Length: 285
Image (cartoon, one colour):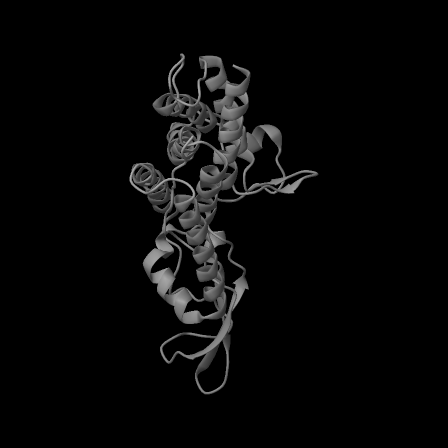
């Protein structure tokens, strides 16, 4: 079956770098550099979720325009490599970091931004150095996951995988936040005592339920329930199974688990898990 590309140009993360700058108006002496302070947590979550969904939908539209595999796949892999090179460049050049934080800092999570500290020098000079090392953002793994899905799966399966990632992930966050605001939700970490749970929140029971429901609906967009000329076919119970497994993948992706360590980012895991399950179940059905 023909394969189609999904690509995007999105975010990178702040670098690890030490630089010396003259800051006559900055208060120094070992304090934090707040010129690019992180925005309100609620606002950043909403902005990221909207951006996440819109990006995925744009990629699906583009997948019907760009030439098929292997050209599209090569473009995706090239974009992924460029994305990574930009990140490494920002590790070495403070000007790239300054520009990127001005443009996209409002969409970055704390661990994707890193943190500066200012060290006092002589003659009103300050040395900025990283207090914490920033990580590659979720957008990088979104791109990589879409690229691998395009390479590994037929077009119908790849599109479905990217659609689940694009919509179910942010919907889970919105549903979880809404029920938490109504005080009728509970986080999985409170039930399972997961080690090293992040301070920025985490998956909840209501959010996981929203993920399962939205995943089931997403699979109907490209994959029918009965025989057809398309490349895959799924029953309702198969869709339910895929939704549950994908929800569990979203819950553990990018998090520290006992005896396992840190899992790969969910933006990479979700489309690969969904695609593999569709191909496996369709082969049996």
